[in-house]
Image (tube, rainbow, N blue to C red; front, side, top):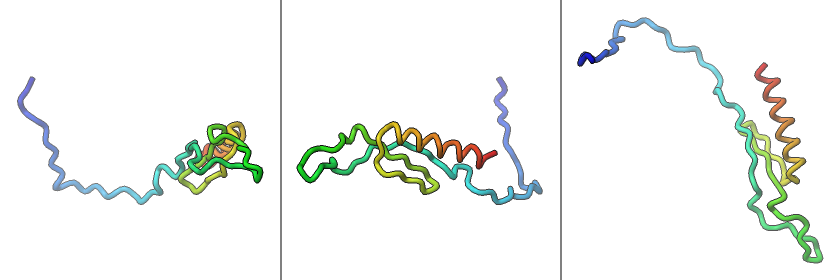
Amino acid sequence: MSEHRFTLNNTSATIAPAAVRPPHHLHNLRYKKPTEATRTSPEGHTLRALSDLTVVTCACGLTTPALPNDEARLAYEEHRNEIRDEMA
């Protein structure tokens, strides 16, 4: 192997800076488990365990309330389809 190393000397380069583009990641779709206290009825019964609920969030501002897992999955899929259509 050679002991010569390649060094880039771009002091005379005339490359224009890249055009300003919007951030690449406008969306960051995530599932989260709610961290709030367990919801109870007025009689003191637990309405639904927190492990059965999921919140869907996205960097674009989407935040669903705590939904049952099946409904959260549906909200996730719908937003993912909107993102796909937006990118096309």
